[in-house]
Image 1 (cartoon, rainbow, N blue to C red):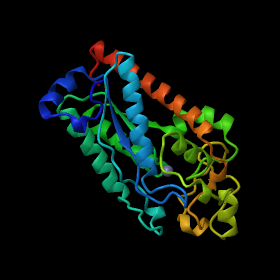
Image 2: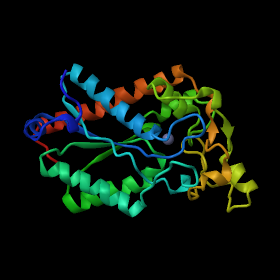
Image 3: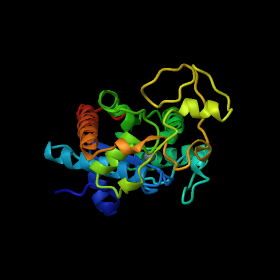
Image 4: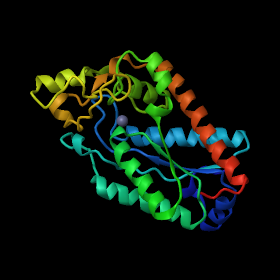
Length: 272
Ligand SMILES: [Zn+2]
């Protein structure tokens, strides 16, 4: 088996790898509270494992996919009242991501996919990949698990998709994360209702659910401790390993297809 982690290569091996790599995955997570039942590193863990498993599967299919060391910090200011949470300001986070991409490009790694597993990073990463494109003319793709598997999630999940809830806990179980299921809880299950009850700016048309419900105006993030005592937003008691495995299979298959497409294009000589 080849080495899948860029960080495990020597620089000489990296020179070679840059020439033969079909795609580079950049896993990004967070260090933030995930309720009473999941560890702080859950997003980073999911990003690392999803990327690594995809690289392993890629090798079986004759592709070379390299995984960058995981970026464990992200946009988590709204979790900051829970112990152990660490955050970067959105502006700094954009700079960090752009610099990482530029570093890779300098040494010939031009087909990159950011594998993001923290919802709070999403808006900022969109800014980062567009800024990187504007500055360098190079396109980086962004894969986020709740989007990659959105159809599967919609069919399978009882509750919505927000934080440390049914879907994320299921995925954590499937990936072998430390999960204290006896401490799983249901909190702020209806985020919109919770926000309204607190007396905060609310509209029936605001989008409070990450994926499934409509809404055509966007509210900002909520300071999580103001809407949930445990830190969970949703229902983590409904999580099972079986549900997680179904999500995970979809995630690996589809991310692999993305790598396959990029690899095919690079063999045709595309560099951007
Ligand atoms: Zn998470």
